[in-house]
Length: 237
Image (tube, rainbow, N blue to C red; front, side):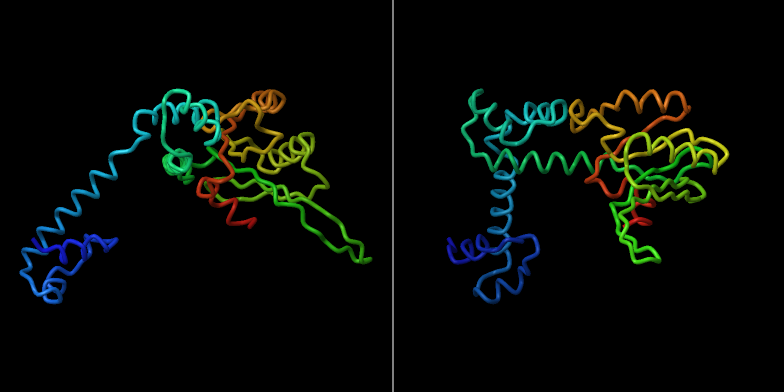
């Protein structure tokens, strides 16, 4: 038994990338000996990766994140009452991985047909200096058509819901039409954040009525998903 070979392989993080011939020469053994211990180490690591004290609670964790938007600490304390004996970091890491996976799955490619879609966003407050030297804080309202990339821009003094509606009416007049779908961040003038969860977004009642009256379907995306709103974010960042 070559403990030196086994210990050498155990010390390596990326065992799949080891040069077997080089390791065999350095340790003075046959390449097949290195391969034997290498396969043993890969098997052991794989078994450890797929066995977790959290396994029987993962469905509960996912339900709490997706349906209730629960934080990792709240989930940790809840599953403790159900018999979970592991640590908080295990739960927190799993919640992060799950959210990242869901974010990747939900990323949408916005290459659309004419008239189908537009995207709306606000630029954060910026300071502009007037000709008289006065500093003015302004917001930039931006809407971009998905197919043509035609943009409508308006400077505003605030980002209230009333101002949002006014800007959109002006944009519809400018475009001489209304897109079938319009994409928004989860801004408070659009989304009822208190009633929204990780997967289930609840629209603000006034905004929902506005969209129905105007004749477009609102689509929301989470702010930490930058890929979703690619051509708007590229313009304003």
